[in-house]
Structure formats: structure tokens, C-alpha cells
Image (cartoon, rainbow, N blue to C red; front, top):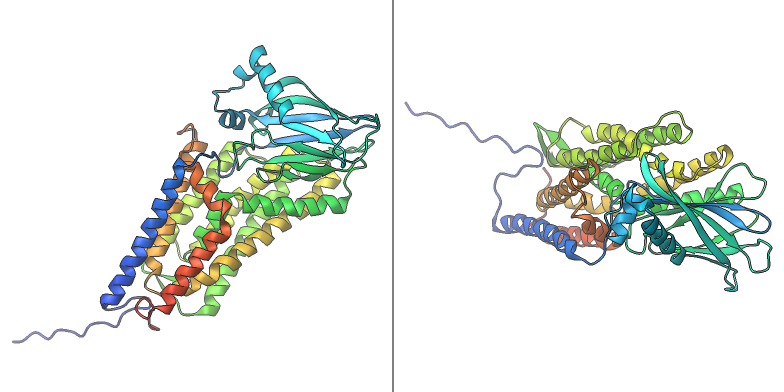
Length: 444
């Protein structure tokens, strides 16, 4: 008796029975592109600059205005100082008399104040002690700025200690005018901007709010770990989870709704903990929070390779968004703001974060939607997810002290320094993949 062979089942959505020569070439080209991207990222490790993705600690300049002088403190994280100077500094060694004097001269050589016309103020850096700020050892110096005519007026402050070598380091500047109870945020200095205008009468609430918006924008734009977490969540957004695998989805409306869900879940998660932590209701050690952020990228990268749970990216975004909010709050805590200034800064900072996230989505999501309809996308998705997993693993090892220094810091610094180039390259790959008939898939 002859056995009848059952007909072949129709391919599921996102699967294709057999690839032609051009289709196989497209898949190989996509794999080669992903490998080249990984190789390029690896090569940047030998670059001469040093950086860190999202530093565990930041520098804070707290200024107090008096009629005849400006006093304050300079708070330098010892771990970042050691990396910038390439010295084995610790909380004990940095306060030894000879080393303390060296550090005092170092800070004095990297800070100055001047009138708008360029007339220099007298600058004095004194003292030197180690204080625990958010569970991180900081070397704290006392600062005195004296105007040439003996009366404090508006001036320009220049400061670039640590940041001149550690490009991703951040310096927060806060001001407390004479007679005020709390500090107001003036802004942030980084490797690109070393000078900030300081109003003697203090910043208004509106100015503090605007500065906080800019602060939120810069923090996300220059925070590789937060950006990479968002990218990992967006990678599977144009796809469907079927039987433990990602398959293509042709429902554009549904894809857009999923993106909205992911971004909203992350925004709600970090907004809750940002507000609670900034107002003093909850707290967590910085190193623990930063380790959990690295873990969030690792988990979201694995989810981009294989779905962990149905619609898991929304739950991942919400859950780990709570951890990211604690990291945001740690930065505001370094500013030592008063209650009134804190509320305005909190709202402005959160607004800046959301605006930057929407910009990232607007830059990347159109390319991902186009690529998801081509045979190239699986290779691109796996390649980008693999890079994210490797970077997250390195961050996690550093933040849990398994590694003294992250060997991939230069990779993240290079990517963050050229965001539009990265988005443009992705758009070019999407355009070419869609223009060539072979890689483009037919509607399932």
C-alpha cells in the first residue's frame, strides 16, 4: 500500500518556505553587516580617550553667594578621579598630606572665575577631606572666589577637572544666593562645555526649570546605558512572539501601539521612583541601582533575541524603569536642592528625559519598521542585541566589582558621541534593504 504524503503546511507569518539565491545573499549580507558593526565597536577599544557609560558618581559644585565673595565646596568622586589621573587612588591614600596637596593643586589648575569682560577673580582651594555622598567616597575641597572690585556680581565659572580625561563624566553646578535656604540648579558641565554663567542674585524658578530640562536631555543623550536599554526594547517592537520565536508582523497600527506601550511603561516606571527618591521617601545604594540597570539591558537584550514572555518588553520597561528612576534621582540628590527648587527641578528633569526618549524613538523606529519587513532584519536584530548583551555584561561586571575597569568603555563613548551617525547608518541599511527586491519580503 502506498503511503500518502500530507501536503506541506502553509508557512506561518514571518516564515518563508525557501530562499532564492538573492534571498540567501541578503541574509548573509545582513549577518556580515552585524559582524562588521561588532568589529568596528571592538576596534574603538584602542582609542586614546577614556570614558564610562553612566558613571556611578558625579562631581558637584555647590556655590554660596555673599556680598563680597562666593564660597562653596567641590565634591570629586575618588573612583572617577583615579581613572582620570590614572592613579590608584583610594579614600585612604588620597588624604595623605603629599597627595592631598597634589590634588589641591590639580583642582586649582582646573577651576577659574572671571567677569564677562574676562577680568579674572581670585580663586582659592583649601581643606581636603573624604565624605560619603550617596555611598560613594568623594574628595571634598573648600572653594573661595573673590571679585577684583570686592563686590560680587554676575560672573562666568570655568571647571574641567576629571572631565578633561573622562569624557562621560558630569559636573553639576548649584547656587544658593545670599539669604536663601536652598540651592537652585544652574546647569551641568561636561567634556564639551566647561564654562557656565553664574548670576549673583541666583537663578529664578523658571531658569532652574529650564536648566533642569536641559539637564534631563543631556543626561539621557549622554547616558549610553539608558539609551541602549531603550534600543533593546525597541528591537522586537515590530515583531510578534509565536511559539518562543520572533516572527514578522504586518500590522503597522499594532506595531506603533506596542512602541507607545513600551515608552509609556518606561516613563511611568522611572517617574514614580524618581519622584519618590528625590523627595526622600525611598533610597537605594548607587552601586546596587547601577548594577540593576546593567542587568536590565542584559535581560532586554536576551528578550530581543528570544521572547522571554509574551509582550515582555512592556513589563521589562515598566519593571526596570523603576530602577532607572532611582539612578535619575541620585543625580538630583547630588545637587543638594531645597524643597521648592527640587520640585521645579524634578519636573523639568523628567520632561527633558521624556523629550529625549521620544527623539530616540522618532530617529530609530521608522528604520526598524522598514527593516522588519526585509530578510535582513533577523541578522541586524541579533547583531545589535548581541552587542547590547556584551556591553551590559561588561557594565555589570564593573559595577559589581568583578572587573576593576570596563575594557569596553570606549565603545559606548564612541556610539554616544555620534548618535546621528548611528541613526543615519541604520536608515541607510533600511533604505538599501527595501530598495533591493531580493531582501524585501512578500506579505504573509
